[in-house]
Image 1 (cartoon, rainbow, N blue to C red):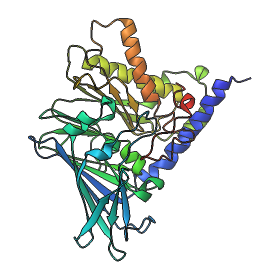
Image 2: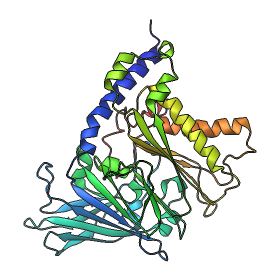
Image 3: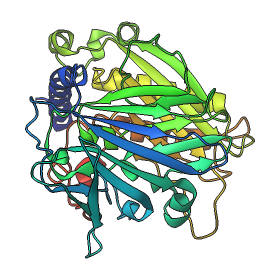
Image 4: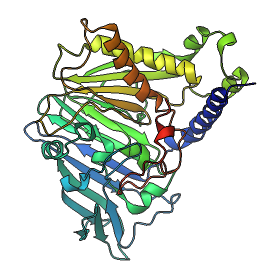
Length: 399
């Protein structure tokens, strides 16, 4: 008789494979519903600028005529707090397809909503706003929930903290969106989204980069990293080579099922590190542990449900004693590992310290399978503007 856990793993694998197979077509869609442009073009400023340009797409039944509602998230799947990201949105403006300004009014009850008073014969064309990342980071006391800027050095952005959406967008599963990032000349950029154009795997992009999200959730769940002080390492991982190292006698699943269904045979794996304490975070050690953790999980789950994955690590000096750090977060194609200042790993770390560090990596990487691709009630679809409902933590944190 099969053990209960074996049944659970088989079911997990089947669901992950189905997700990977069904999602690929939407990522490769030739048209997009909207283009989000994120700009940072002044080294003396801590402001970023967001411009959302809506496309006329007859295949998507979302209407841009008449009054619209624009929303900023306040919570995320697997989040444990409510963050008022809307408080940091400045200069929000909207224009019609003929270039006329549309009246914008913030919700009078304090909600994260703006009413765009577009006339019935007008078509919404663009929404634009700015965010001061210094104020943003100072106001969000959970350091791991905030985007960050270090002038002339680094910017780390959590998608859900800066990207808003029109009210119907979070309810549509197949809603291709393009993200374009424009930065300072010569600044390296790393996106966790699949690239929108063909480029050499592992090739670093500078100044401008773009990616495609299959829907708003995918966009909100992404991260953007840029700046000369971050370290980016690319490691291609071949699933076939890993499979050869694991004999059929110890596989937990029906290998015929795996060979017939998994669609990715290789993984573009990235490790992005920004640290303000190089003595206590050895980049090479952290990268090696990340690769080992991912390889172990690929063998454990016996599939590669994503074409690329990023482990992103930040170790920043605390702004003050009110801010807290050290909690990591999982995403569909990445994880953000927030490390408390001075508590990383280096050549002097003990075996236990290294083991604990790598467990945290593996724990949050594996969330890309569970619960990101096999989830329970209230996890997805998700209401981004309300306090998260946490009634299935036993499932979300099973591993």
